[in-house]
Each structure stands twice: as structure tokens, then as C-alpha cells.
Amino acid sequence: MTKVLTSRFDLKGEACDIDVYLKTGGYEALNKVLKEFTPDQVIDEVKKSALRGRGGAGFPTGMKWGFVPKQSARPKYVVCNADESEPGTGKDRDLMRWDPHLLLEGMAIAAYALNGAPNNYIYIRGEYWYIIDILEKAIAQAKERGYLGKNILGTDFECNIFVHPGAGAYICGEETALLESLEGKRGHPRLKPPFPAVVGLYGGPTVVNNVETLTAVPWIINNGGEAYKALGTEKSGGTKLFTVSGHVNKPGNYEVPMGYPMRDLINNECGGVRTGHTLKGVIPGGSSMPIFTPEEVEKATMDYESIASLGSMLGSGGVIVLDETVDMFEMCMNTIHFYKHESCGWCTPCREGTRWLYKVCERMKKYEGKSGDIELLDDLAGKILGKSFCALGDAAAMPTQAMIKKFRPDFEKRIKHNFVQLTAAD
Amino acid sequence: MYSPENEDKIDEYITHYPVKRSAILPALHIAQIEHGYVTDDDVKYLAQRLDMRVNEVEEVVTFYSMYSRKPIGKYKLQVCRTISCNIAGCEKISAHITDKLGIKVNETTPDGKFTLQEVECLGYCDLAPVLQVNFDYHEQITLARTDEIIETLK
Ligand SMILES: Cc1cc2nc3c(=O)[nH]c(=O)nc-3n(C[C@H](O)[C@H](O)[C@H](O)COP(=O)(O)O)c2cc1C
Ligand code: SF4
Ligand code: FES
Image (cartoon, rainbow over all chains, first blue to last red; front, side, top):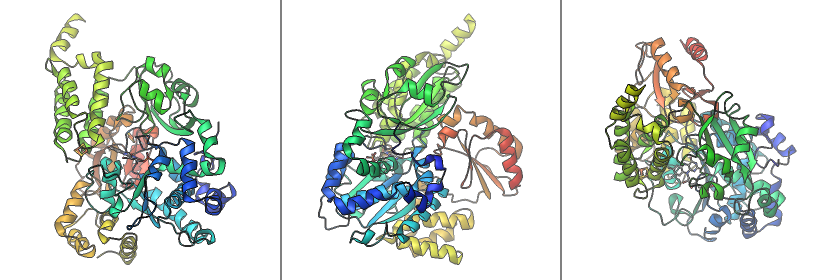
């Protein structure tokens, strides 16, 4: 299988050294772009590749870059979203720690495509402190060799990259909250429109892209957009890195082509469901996304369209595999706790709704749910969904509703009346 | 206020942005590395250093979960409690630390060495369960490994 993103993973960090990176084809794409491409040609190539944003929303990357006005009174920015906080996801971590230059190269190409963005940022979650070190060393090396900084490769193209640590807030992964945070404020989301491509960081046009999105760019330049697209499906070009966690024999990060069967990802790459156990459900794209039943897993392929047609989303690509030992009520409560904790408090449906959901779960956890509590959870989730200021509210509501719908018996057990009946029948 | 090296770091951070205020998150990390938590003096000092009002700094400190405004242990034992770690048995790790050190979640040992925290997803879900001690990750943690780590820090 073609490795677009993980070709240097086996070097286990040796590629952090620029000499190793250069020897394995590094910075060739940047060189090519500066010599042979206009900014618009870069954007066209990325459009042809059908690359879609890997941060969660799957927005076409070339189109996003195209929204940025070529001329702007305020400086333009490329901001890399390395906040990686979606439960189930740990892919950007490995991309950055095993191959940091690939990200820097992708960012420099993006800055060139915007027709110049001299100062750019990697917003990385503060917990990844050791990776900040890795990135800063790589930046210093790249600068020394003329791949970053002023007059890159003898041209008048300038690109600086700075690493900015976050400090523990899932909401700062939301792109406008991220920009607020980068400006030194609390991470509350901004009203959209205007979108960051028009009014972003410090009021300048800004492209916010996920780590994995940017690391795919050098390969696209080297091999062509068509070739990248051909690796995947018509609408989901290329490959994708999936973090598989939970009840599989070999959890880890795996790069597979878009359109790869979910069943194969679990059985081949991950060595199957934990030996001696059976599959109960799979969360396909991080904890914000609705869960699949084993029947749906059989049908799903790992691309945006397939997962969407089955009523969920590919999201961040965090695949969480759950076997029969799992109680879905517990999973639901755990997930609600996360969103309650991470709600930024800006809008009422999300702030109050997540707390209320949790309150109901608390009595259900003690098998003291009241009759009607399951309907109450579902109804509360429905009142958050689509009525919150940003997508975090939806992220709390969608998985809750899906778990209730698909694994209702696990919730029924938690209603006091039912519990008594069930134990009496035993 | 801080070591010359850290003062330089703050100066360096300020050069990264068109506005000084953008350096507040990295500067607060530095304050915490120096003092263990964000002290009243840190808040005043950083406000003055980054052209912010004191309440603006407070607003930021209280928003982000990695900062503490109260003294905490020298070693923050952060057990991930989110979904992938949950099914990998993180509750047992927490309970074990509670038994071993005699502190509940969010409590600090009387000698000021350890604070136990349960935190949300640390981005190591494929290597669950995860314990982060200050900035150091320990993945696929077991009870025995937890003991070892604590012993070496005692
Ligand atoms: C609550 C919330 C959290 C998010 N967290 C992340 C994150 O940790 N990393 C990320 O790349 N995108 C995250 N996103 C998506 C970003 O808002 C944005 O769509 C993305 O960074 C754009 O980059 P892409 O087009 O390359 O995917 C999050 C969105 C929401 C609503
Ligand atoms: S939906 Fe939640 S996270 Fe988003 S703005 Fe409202 S309170 Fe904040
Ligand atoms: S759930 Fe524990 S690291 Fe992600």
C-alpha cells in the first residue's frame, strides 16, 4: 500500500534530523513548487487531488485555500491545527514526532499557495510538550538550511513557522476558538461568517488546516493531484491515517487508502477484535460521531461518503472498537462527561444541556433511573443538536442519541423499575 | 522574576506575534514550571509584561485546564479518564494511586509531592491506559508500572 503520510514512521524519529529527511526525498516538493508552480497552480493541484480536511469536517482543502483573497491589506496566515483532542485520536502526535519536517514542508507550500504568508503557527495541545521540542528543533534546522525563513531556496519567498502551545481545552480545536486562543484570549468560538479564510487571525485571511491535511501536501506536489486522488475514492482522495483504539489485538495508527473496508482495517491491520471476544460496536471517527452496530461495520468503508451514508461521520479518524464486555450506557455517560467538561460555557443549550444530560446519567448509573429518563436523555440531546453556537454541542448530542437508539437494552437496565423486575426474574 | 533562561524564552515568544498578548499561554506555562502553579505575583507580572490587565490574565488562567491558581503537588499524576482509557481500566489505576498515596482525586499528599488528577483524553488512545506525570507520558500503564513510577519520584 502506498504510504503518503507514514513513509518515515519506521525510522522511529530519525527523520527528525533534516539530513535523513532530505535523503528520503524531503523538501523536494517545496523546491519544485518554488521553481515550477504559481500559487494558483498549487491550489489547482490540491483541488485535483480531492484532498479533504482531516480535522473533522472533511472540507475540500483546495477549495478552502482558494477562498483566501490573493491581495490583502492585512497579513495572511497558515495556522496548523495540532490541538488533537478528539477522544480516540492520536494520529497527529505520530505525524509530528516521527516526521516533523513533512509538516513544515506542507505548511510552507500552503503559505506559498496563499501568495505569501510570512508568519505561520502550529497550535499544538500543551500536553504534547515534548513534541514542541521536536518541532522547534526541526524548524531551526530547516531555517539553517534555507528551507524556512527569508529568501527560501534563493527566492524572495519568506515563511516562518512558530509553535504555539495550548493549555488544555478541547474547544480550542474548533478553528475560530483556536484563533481566539492564539490571540491570547479564552477559547470561545467566533460567529461564522466571516470565515477565517476571509477574516481570521489578527483580522487577516487565514487558512486553518489539520496536521494530517498539511502533511499530505508534499506527496501531492511530488506525484500529482490525480495520482493522489487515484489512491482513494472519487470524492475522498488519497489515504488516511486512522487511530484504532479499544478492543482490538493490535491498536495503533494505520494508514490505509480511502475506501478501505472497515472490517479489513479491524481484522487485518489490527489483528481482529480482542481474542475470545465479539464485536459490539465501533465509533468510526472520534467520540463525537454516532456509533455503528456490527452490521453497519460490515457495510462501511473508510471514506467520507460511506460513513455518512450509514448515518455517521469519518470525523478525525479515531476508530474506537468496543466488544461485548462494554456497557453502552457507561460509554454514553463517559462521553457526556467529556463534553460537559469541555463545553466552553458560551451558549446555553450546550452549557446547560450537557450538565443536565450528566445529571440524568448520574441517577441511572446507580440503577435509579426514573421511568421516562431514556426519553429525557434523547429529548435533551435533541434540544442541543443544531441549536448550539458551535459544533461541540452537536458532538455531545449525536453520539448520545445513537447509543440510545442502537443499544437501548443497556439503558433500560438502568431504570429502577426495570432493574427490580429483571433481578426478580433471575 | 524567572530564571534568565526563561525570561529570554518569554522575550523570544513575544517576537513571534504582532501583539504581545498572544504570548500569554506559553508565558503561563513558564510561570507554572517555575512556581508549580500560577501565583498572584505571576498574574500581576505577566499582565505588566504583556500589556494586559490583571483581570484579562485571570480570565485566561481560569479557562484552561492545564493551569492551576492554587498550589499543587510537585508531581501531577494525571490519569486519563476518557473512553479508550476507560475501557482499558483507567479506573483501577486511579483507585490504586488513591490507595497507595492516601489521596483522592484532586487532592495532594501532605508532603506536597503528589497530586492526583483525572483528566480528559490525552491523545494516546491507541496506547491506553495513559498516565501523564507533569509533561511525561507513560503509556499502556499497569498497576506495577504505576508503582515503579511513583517509587522513583518519592
Ligand atoms: C469542538 C471541535 C473540536 C475540534 N478539534 C479539532 C482538533 O483537535 N484538530 C483539528 O484539526 N480540527 C479540529 N476541529 C475542526 C476544526 O474546527 C477545523 O475544521 C479544522 O481544523 C480545519 O482543518 P482541515 O480542513 O484540515 O480539517 C474541531 C472542531 C470542533 C467543532
Ligand atoms: S456549543 Fe458549547 S462549546 Fe460551542 S460555543 Fe456553545 S457552549 Fe461553547
Ligand atoms: S482516551 Fe485516554 S488518551 Fe485518549
